[in-house]
Length: 290
Ligand SMILES: NC(=O)c1ccc[n+]([C@@H]2O[C@H](COP(=O)([O-])OP(=O)(O)OC[C@H]3O[C@@H](n4cnc5c(N)ncnc54)[C@H](O)[C@@H]3O)[C@@H](O)[C@H]2O)c1
Image 1 (cartoon, rainbow, N blue to C red):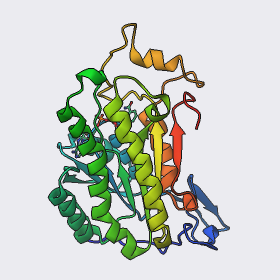
Image 2 (cartoon, rainbow, N blue to C red; image 1 turned 60 degrees about the vertical axis):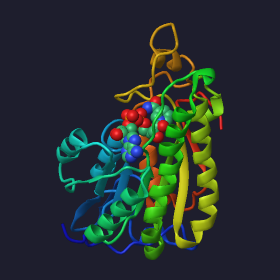
Image 3 (cartoon, protein in one colour; image 1 turned 180 degrees about the horizontal axis):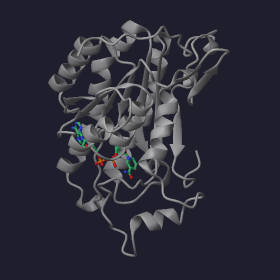
């Protein structure tokens, strides 16, 4: 696949930008004039990488970007068979590209960045979604498990971001969205390793946002609640289903879905959110207050 041609864009991360010059705002834009009616998808012309996109939330994020006109790159350690099929079933979506990616490996993240550069010449959006979690009481938590979680959830965040930042800096535009968890506010038990890593995601987001804002790059985190993905965490709670338990603590009376989160990720990735950076947006149906 060659480079895709991109419409001229302005960048609302930069001051005095006039959004109305190109019509890319959040939500589909309908332009009516005397002779024509046209619809422009939110992320048309953008190249988007979602890490950990084979299943779960990552797959839903990738699908949302594909629906909104983006060229999507799926990065995962496993073959994203289901995600590829889902994206290819979306009418008018660009053909997705799958790249074998282990976010814990510097060789792998560098190779991913080179491949994106040679195929598309740019990367507009990075969604740092790859993450692992497993419940373990602190007293049983081994150093090995602790390191494994830090390796994917923090070193992976560092390596994937470091690999693509030069591309974003060169084009003076970028959106980085990092997946954290509402467990950082709740102090959820049996997840000390995970909660620690996800708090690290927030620190990373804040400090990096300050460094790269001058290049038109925004960096934000979302803390999500327990979501019905294909691999929900273990059911250490003894009574009933963990999703039902969580639902009882939410202000909104329905479970959070990957599609709910995908729309927030899409918003943070769009031009219109360019003045938001270094923030942590809590998306959990109203359990934690932030
Ligand atoms: N599902 C939830 O309830 C929930 C709640 C809070 C936060 N989160 C966060 O959302 C993100 C996605 O969660 P999910 O539930 O969809 O997870 P999931 O386990 O369903 O999917 C994770 C994906 O990441 C991939 N992955 C794992 N290690 C990788 C590596 N080294 N390199 C590249 N890819 C790798 C896996 O192959 C998988 O496709 C994670 O960061 C997670 O911490 C999830």
